[in-house]
Image 1: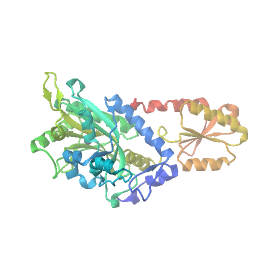
Image 2: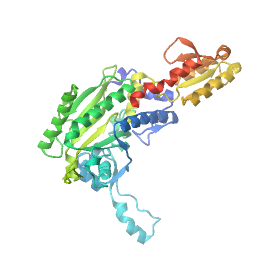
Image 3: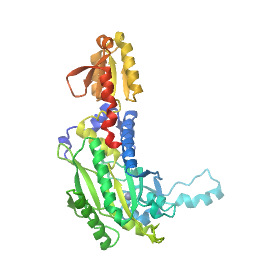
Image 4: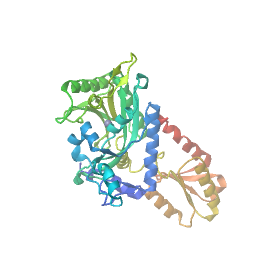
Length: 422
Ligand SMILES: [Zn+2]
């Protein structure tokens, strides 16, 4: 990709908004600032609501898991070069001899930082004997994952070594697959629309050279994905050889205004892990049955999602902006009304800032615009006398004199605009 064709560079926008930065001592990992974490949490909140409304339960699992588990899942052999291994942990010299030898087994174990949460969610599934009444079981996690990407490929938030993804797994019957894939595509539509993306592209990534499991299972899994897209009326392209080592997948990509394609969501039909990990549930006849496993992410990496938003829009939508409204007073004479406006916005749950200091109004407007604050409510004596504000919208040169009640109305309808995300 030629970076020079980029309309906005997300790193420059993020700096202006004070969202995050990078450090040489943690390449490919983000240091989130307070304003950035507001955005991150805003996205998580929306996703949490969508996931819950579609029948998922949130879980949390460890970041480090032992080598033996990764060997069993096949990640160690087929994905090992991309994993951060915690190797030969230092002996703890503070322990005396006896304690040291008792602890040595644990100390000498190899761990790897998870590149995905599948084995951990399998462990949660296997923590109990499961009944058909619990199937489909849908688990999701904001999974902190690590992938050891080559340093030359790292690029701001777009390619990282540590990121958070909506990492979800469904354990279901084969007969449920169409419904679950349909559920996934509905979630994609709802969530993408909330961020202003109406169109997306679907690719089906087929079996790679390096893979586990029999060709019969791959035939079956690939057919399920293609049939589902056909039945649900989604056009798709095929990507031969691009599937993951344990399953084929549907990949959902966004195309931006420059024609660049960004792969975000994915769902994968997996017959292999249920066999390897001997998953089962008791069916309605009282017999043990093996579930099928689906791996899914709707947005994928949240960091990358934020990067894409900034690259495409050069700012953030009003509902997601870390500061939604800045109230700026023209002089001391209007400070009381500025404070009243600010207090009322805060009571509404709006992320607002008050700028009632002595700086000139033009300086305040310039600084707030540089920080990409979507709404600046300018308050002078005239506004104070009329219970109005002079509203300046980011990127719009005209200003509007509006009654404060009208601003309240506009802001209170924000919740509805994101109501796709009930
Ligand atoms: Zn998975």
